[in-house]
Image (tube, rainbow, N blue to C red; front, side):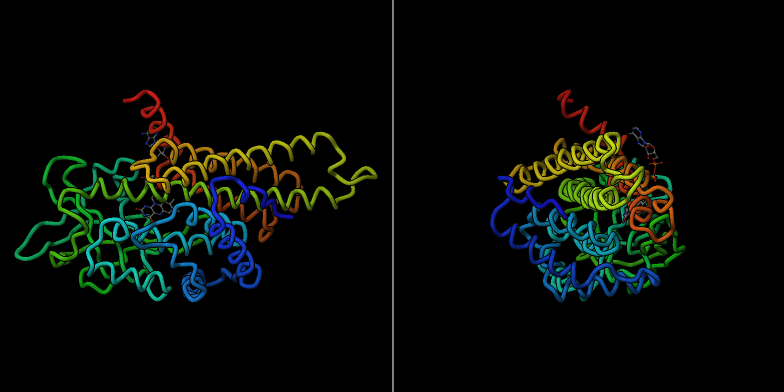
Length: 376
Ligand SMILES: Cc1cc2nc3c(=O)[nH]c(=O)nc-3n(C[C@H](O)[C@H](O)[C@H](O)COP(=O)(O)OP(=O)(O)OC[C@H]3O[C@@H](n4cnc5c(N)ncnc54)[C@H](O)[C@@H]3O)c2cc1C
């Protein structure tokens, strides 16, 4: 039985509780989907989430971080790919939601309806954690820009209809010389250089931009503000990565409670053993602590805090690291079944790993927290 008592916490309003109940009902009827054709599954999920109205929460001028987190937590608990499909609609259009022009916002209508798929292209082969080193260039030329370079690890790469791309425009050295661009996938010059496969499959690619001509209107915000835009987007979405991890961890705990309550060993249910109860207690404690940090960060942002770097970093760091431990304990409690291909805890074990790396690796979150507490 899923623990839903957290919905009574003061972080939430009635509209959040209603949203969580409606989504729970939708998930029970529609998830999990077959992941055999991962591109097709993602397209189908975006379309279905759009038709059901849940993608309305993924973008727009007033991003409600508590809604984003509740949706990601709930979807992740039912199907990691459904969480991915929802999350990327938000992250891919995050820069447009926060800084886009009226014309660029027309894309939001399509991504929120599930009629277009979006992607966020920041990382490069030589600059993942070190964003300031981006080497993709957008050179001003006539009434626009010419884009050249390479991006990698781009989620939805290959199936996206529109990409937010960060490139060096050179107003200043390092982080102050970057800009963000909105790039429709059918713009001549975009090459899907390689499709990448990872332990929990989802659409992922390395992209190449070959002399791609972009109109001036493709620029999101102002020239030179790309780093600030990227960090503002991550400030919203980092807590939601924690929320997805929380969903995975909750599922692992639920599966473990069911398993240890029904599995008979030594003449009694497995959960009669105190050492097993110790595991369950540690898991429940980790889940609740993560939930408190995730929804504290989301609430703080929703209450109007301009930046939540410390809160979001704590939420992501704690929730992703703890989920890894909770899921590992779940695998242990399931015995041999826990490592069988296709078992839910085996898939959770694969799903959680990348969350400790992307949108700022755990080590980077520690640096952010330390800087914040030191006042640096
Ligand atoms: C499944 C998946 C999906 C992704 N989706 C996207 C996407 O949609 N868009 C996008 O732009 N990117 C995406 N990424 C890229 C992701 O953000 C990068 O992988 C991440 O930022 C790390 O960069 P890197 O892989 O180059 O590792 P590196 O930057 O080489 O870092 C390697 C390791 O070094 C350590 N490290 C790095 N910096 C520090 C530091 N300051 N202090 C201490 N230790 C440090 C960490 O342990 C880190 O994991 C995705 C990655 C994965 C795995």
